[in-house]
Length: 284
Ligand SMILES: NC(=O)c1ccc[n+]([C@@H]2O[C@H](COP(=O)([O-])OP(=O)(O)OC[C@H]3O[C@@H](n4cnc5c(N)ncnc54)[C@H](O)[C@@H]3O)[C@@H](O)[C@H]2O)c1
Image 1 (cartoon, protein in one colour):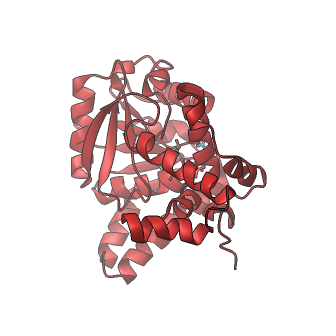
Image 2 (cartoon, protein in one colour):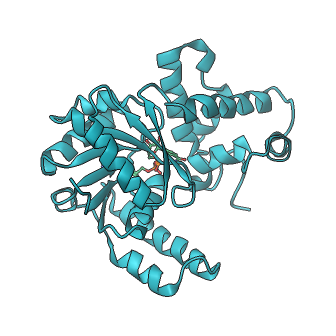
């Protein structure tokens, strides 16, 4: 099956950018969120991201218009999903919520439709089990910022078919993304390697080893990271990072316990850039 139309469920940090990737590659892209405010915020954020690309000379104004003309955004699930060949889910990192969303995607879309999740750490196999088509369920783990990062991790669940992997890899290729295909396991490969390091940066901060800027600078200037781990955590959203570490801790043991400092910041509502404050204060 050729993928002609795409839907994205969830218009938060990742969904917005995934919508841009898909529409930029020429696919009519129907975006949907439960929250009307997020539909509005997400649509504005897509426009302003494209404005930034035009200002930097990376996209022409006609291309901006063409991308926007391919995107629709609403809270109407059925009309967003009923014609999609590929649906990419990007709702919060909560297994019960994602299973419910997968059930809904399964009910509202044609039998041929591929159901993909952008989960960072949860089992694709467990999401697939909530549907009647586990062979058509797959992980497409886009990294932040999805419109710019070159690579997407493609995750095979236990029952994902070769055909599904091929069709999704072809779609991502048309989106200009490289892929790496990995087996299903908490955190796959990238987050299995990276998130414990980010968690460790919170432990180092709490232990007073250095201030946040110096911890981040050690990684950017010393190790060549594009962004320090604490600044990156603020960009992911500390709530999302905590949910990921909780999955690791539950599935893989004590060594992955979330750092107390991370837990405290989330309890205080300091979720990072999206709330204006996280490790750093973005309001000043
Ligand atoms: N933030 C990152 O850096 C990052 C990177 C890679 C992967 N991910 C993964 O992507 C997924 C989304 O993360 P995010 O950072 O975009 O989250 P987010 O909190 O920014 O956005 C989630 C969106 O989902 C919407 N939503 C909640 N319940 C819904 C439902 N039932 N139906 C439709 N929409 C619903 C919310 O209103 C919100 O707009 C998570 O699984 C996360 O682990 C995040």
